[in-house]
Image 1 (cartoon, rainbow, N blue to C red):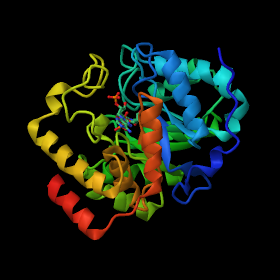
Image 2: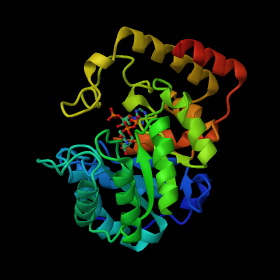
Image 3: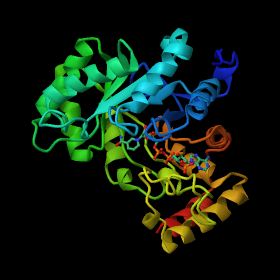
Image 4: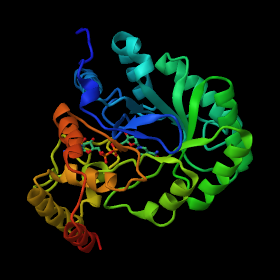
Length: 330
Ligand SMILES: NC(=O)c1ccc[n+]([C@@H]2O[C@H](COP(=O)([O-])OP(=O)(O)OC[C@H]3O[C@@H](n4cnc5c(N)ncnc54)[C@H](OP(=O)(O)O)[C@@H]3O)[C@@H](O)[C@H]2O)c1
């Protein structure tokens, strides 16, 4: 196997933004391992994607206990790669994981109990062969567990040295406000929030981004390309090797409706006029908001990764462009 040596120019290629009012800087583009890094995927490809990402200045890699498939395999594969190629760079990397969705059978492998969160992180650390993660998330709010218990588990994890920072994902504005207050009371501030946010999913604009700004918490939107819809790849049908074309992909064929295709076609025309690919424009559109710390992308090839990172060349929009985009999005 090849021996990786990081590019000496990697830090000159990336923008780093402060995460809320914390001391932590994150790259404007971060890489997630939800798809493309499981046992169903080609190690030769994903290993090179990880190296290229780091060479492009991407220091933040986002995982969760259940990423694969099968669940857990993305952490194992990342851990193996980390040990062989990246262990000398541990202090230059921000690695996150999460627990909150179904991971193992029985009543203790899901949601937000202290029992689940603590056990799950212990398992993640074993799978990745790491001593600690940089950020640990509650992956989703649990309506049946007191927020004090879930946040208490996050606080304990930091005090145990198993994570440096904690974050919330998929919490709505009210749930976020309560969780943030509880974390503050415990003395472990919430670093970052991970919501689903893209041109096609604008719910965070209805309150969440305001809460994050007020509380000075970072924001890392996931699926900023709506899993690949906000690219030009589906304009001429569904490629076999695409997420919608693969049996285990979370994006399903029936989500690619004529209405969606019409929007993509019109957005693509605006992107071309701006001299960007649609993927670049979709990422730039998120990054134009200064409340956003970093966009959390996925990539199934080095070409995609490079294309997406190049969004940073232009993240500003003319008013007429924003108006046109709003008209299309409806
Ligand atoms: N907290 C949560 O609940 C949650 C949920 C989901 C995801 N996430 C996080 O967010 C990360 C990103 O999510 P995502 O993978 O859905 O993000 P995404 O960036 O919206 O979609 C990534 C997919 O889009 C396609 N793509 C990416 N760049 C492209 C480009 N430049 N041109 C053409 N196609 C391109 C690829 O699809 P093909 O495979 O079709 O090539 C790629 O796999 C995850 O890895 C995970 O870390 C978190």
